[in-house]
Length: 370
Image (cartoon, rainbow, N blue to C red):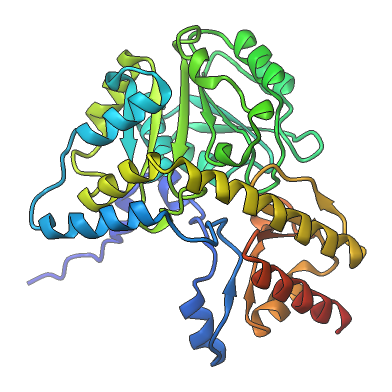
């Protein structure tokens, strides 16, 4: 028999897929401890809630374990009902996601096509570029203004090919915030044929005076999608649950693309209980403010510049950032290098508990002295 020629099956994938640079998450504690043979490492790399999750959410998750032999509710009835009651929206205006990243991907898969385009800011969340490229669409990156979104420039960047604009507010990894009046002016300037995704993953950390009235804007702007997550202030990062709010017609399209069991029964139960525990979120916001003051004072004491942040993290400038990052790892402290965001001279640190923050600052001082 004649041997068949070898075929590289990777060639079956479109070129825009093979060109994707995979997302790099924060290093897990267990991985670091295995690598350098230590215990008791501190992870301040992924903007998690250092207080964990609400006791109510944990109890609800444990109770849901009794029924894990069954598929979850594919329509998420109880969770949608809780979200609808919280925000005063119709249940058919809600799209559930396996984290808010899933909602972002659903937007891209539903509305972007090869040759179309999406607009996002320089130094904005990496997933916007990833989900855009995964559809074969073109990403238009608009230069940042003071490390944040230049919304007027983003509006001017909208061409006939643009179908989606992504806006993170507050922004990750820089922590910057566009005030409500600027966001509203931006929405008014965007053509109604273009979808605007307002990513409010860190919105629970904002004081009321700085929060956009984004839910009320939904009735005025049928091209708006507002995404939320339970991974940050609610402390459910490990369960992967988020949601999007939008016009029912758009939600219907996204739900056609959404996998039917994308949010587990345990995650749904925990999220319902978490929504009902407002005191936990309030305490998390207050604790975050105290930790932010501790970290920023420490950074200033070390003579380091930082970007004022409205999230639960701080991005700071440091010479030889990659080397400092490695030295911090060897001291058992995990932060986040953000060279992939076009910021090679910066590191991002999540706000931890007081003892974790103190350990980071002590380790950073040691790393800088070497």
